[in-house]
Image (cartoon, rainbow, N blue to C red; front, side, top):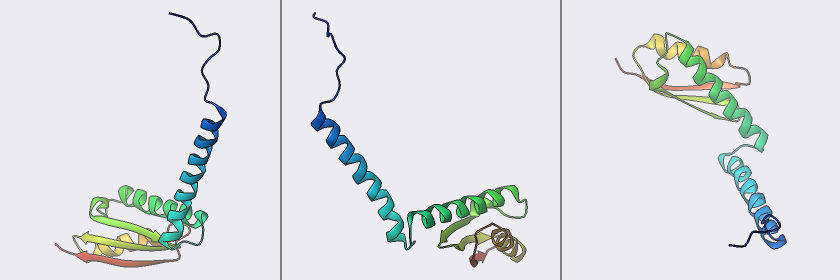
Length: 114
């Protein structure tokens, strides 16, 4: 079996095609932010960060059942939905969300269901 004297590398047309595919993938990813209503990719990243921080604080808070409450953020507006065991838990979730940096307002759609 013959040995190759040089390593195999993609040809120039293949490299160009791979680069074009990467660009299309990146543009597609940034397009997702626009379709969700954010003004920019930066706004999408900010919203994702806010959602993550709210969820993390729910996990750390003994008064809120993080598994029963959903969090979505759009342009700094946090929407809470799901179920709480009491009005106190519903209120605690809203207070926790309001304290996260970057939150402009909170829509509390949590239903109390004992």
